[in-house]
Image (tube, rainbow, N blue to C red; front, side, top):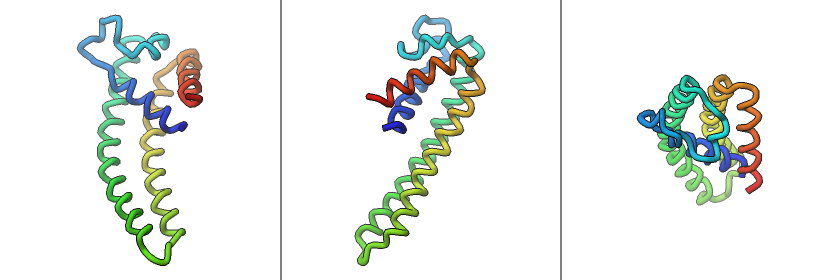
Length: 127
């Protein structure tokens, strides 16, 4: 559930539209209270573009790994070590991409903005 919340956060952030930088609805309502400056807005936007690119590449690789996992399941006898290894490989890839995104966002936000952002993550994690 936690990674679902993070993914939802990322999807919300990906709705940033540089053409509407002066509009009142730069971000989805739930992130509006972060009060980002224009420079922070641009920096978050750049981080999101990198995330989206990385995630598209990962998605293709993840599909191939899933095919390998499916094949492992169909084999007899079941190789639990290989299954676990492939499953962890796929999870690690996703975690690495998300970690890079949050590392960049962490560097952009002020301490108060980080506290607000964490509250959103906590809310989403409990849903």
